[in-house]
Amino acid sequence: MYHRLLKQKIQQHFYKGFAIVLIGPRQIGKTTLVQDLLLEAGNRGLFLNCDELDVKRSLELGTLAALKSIIGTYSLIVIDEAQRVENIGIIAKLLVDNFKEKQFIITGSSALEIADKIFEPLTGRQLQYQMYPLSMQEMYTGKSVLEIDRNIGWHLVYGCYPNVVNHRSDAEMIIKNLAGDYLYKDVLAWKDIRKPDLLDKILHLLALQMCSEVSLNELAVQLKISVATVDNYIDVLEKAGVLLRLQSYSTNERKEVTKMRKVYFWDNGIRNAILGRFDDVTNRTDAGALWENFLVAERLKNNSYHQSTAKAFFWRSKQQQEIDFVEVTQNSIAGYEFKLNVLAKGKPTKAFTNLYPHATAEIIHNENYTQFLNL
Image 1 (cartoon, rainbow, N blue to C red):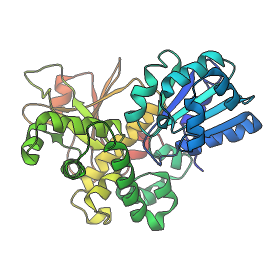
Image 2 (spheres, rainbow, N blue to C red):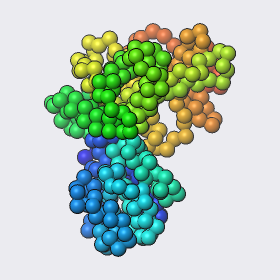
Image 3 (tube, one colour):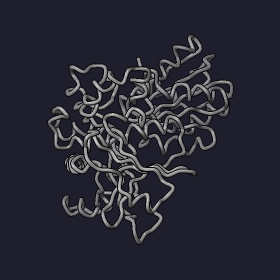
Image 4 (cartoon, rainbow, N blue to C red):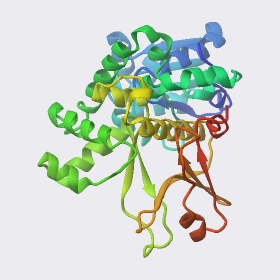
């Protein structure tokens, strides 16, 4: 059991008239987290699993009398995998409006199915939380730097999904099954995404271009499909919690790239499963990309969980000078270059700080990454 950073954030908003909506991909620990909250609630807590047909049917009756008979005298009610229930948004609205003394937690596998069904009907009545694979803070806060260093190479290859981390001897098998499970169940079931072969090809190309600027036009030509179709698939993969994209940072269109986006994966293990590559990081030509992807995903997890206002970008000039990762707040601009080995030559390009004199720039390497990740 890991202490999930979202737990305290969620508890702070209990019994204040809002439904808590918890979303994220399959197998990242949503059910474990809500069951932990229910355990603390003791006999005041009720768990409703909407994968169970009788629970689904009971909720779909939708009348106040039926809903009251389900929740009874319980004060903390979890509706798990809520997207299975027809009209769940309207039902959730009825619950929140008519049982104000109770706390409802609604979970869903991703923003795909649950968005249209819940977010609009619950406007003004819900607080939404995005959950991710385990963060380094959740796994290693309080641990020695030596212990973290000993494990970092493993995470670069196998990632941070709870079941993978907890069963390291079977990590490759678990991550392969997991990748196929939620990619196909969540993504292919969404709207008009109906072509598994095309999804495979897009994911494979994106995995090869991880941490790089991706041209939709080039992908469309390679795959012999329209740019709109490529963009639609990538957008769905983002909503499913598989990918994330960073925009370029620019205040001067004459000097900076403004339209391209870099693609990252939320989990290194999922990316490596797509390529079928689990060899040790010391023997890989993509070690630098694994390092960059890992640090970007970890930083964004932390920013999300700690409700940081920082916005994330990359930066590149039209003369091809680059900064891997840029964080912008109201009062600061910070640029980061990622190098796996402290001995690697190079410094952040001065072109960035020349253009933004108040910005900072530093290299994050294998001897200072723990500070970057707030460990």
